[in-house]
Image (cartoon, rainbow, N blue to C red; front, side):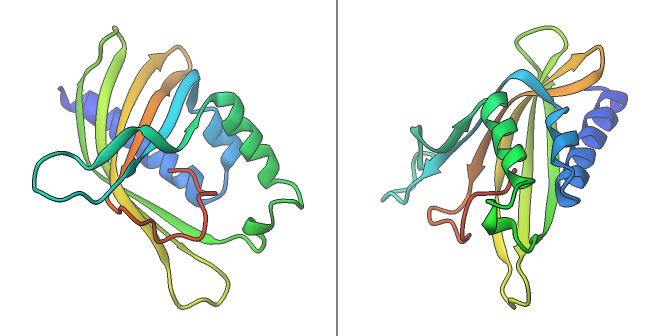
Length: 166
């Protein structure tokens, strides 16, 4: 990949993290393609050294643009009690690796993530970390996330809920 493409895609992912960290969820939705598949398979602990320990046909969530939009709209209501008061959160993105996609103007992008969230005066921060496999698509308006699969490294998630976006 050329350095210009690496720069564009890296900045796109950093901008996405900024939007999520600052709770700009409606703006974040604009980064998603209309046909997005947004999913997180379950990781299990198995004996032995071989295999990924991922159960691809069992997920914590598998969402579309419509379901993600519904989740975002709910965050702006009083029924989103888990977000009141709003938690403080950070998305750290690194190890961005880009390969050509299956279609022209699409790229397969792998990245590592670390998500930290704190609530109120709680001393303990929740964390999730792992790898993301994205398909990014260049459209007239800019880059869009056409697909995201989130692979958590933890078999037991150390978070109170999955209300965040990764």
